[in-house]
Length: 87
Image 1 (cartoon, helix red, strand yellow):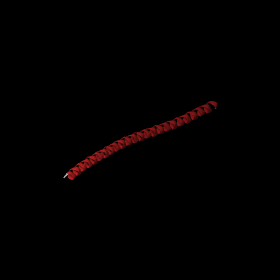
Image 2 (cartoon, helix red, strand yellow; image 1 turned 90 degrees about the vertical axis):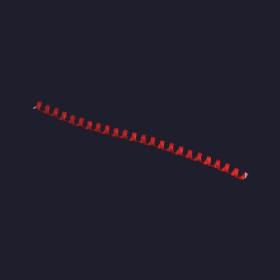
Image 3 (cartoon, helix red, strand yellow; image 1 turned 135 degrees about the horizontal axis):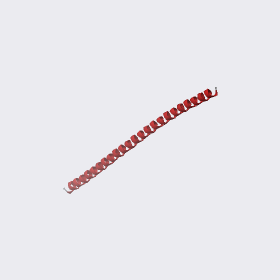
Image 4 (tube, helix red, strand yellow; image 1 turned 90 degrees about the horizontal axis):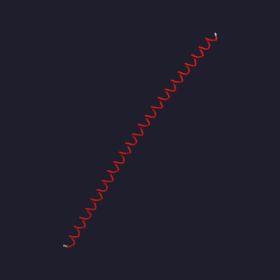
């Protein structure tokens, strides 16, 4: 009879230990999911910043092109004015 009492006590301890291990595994899984969610958020923010930088670079290049065209037009107008004045 004493052996069956020890067996029940041992099984109860094993059951408690198994439950503790499962709870620990669940906590680790939840923590992993939270870390992955933060990493995804950081990656999305970095992508948005890269897209904004690309957009700003494109605008700057377009502005530089417009300035270049404007400078060429001004140069042509000045040259035309000088040529007419020399005649």
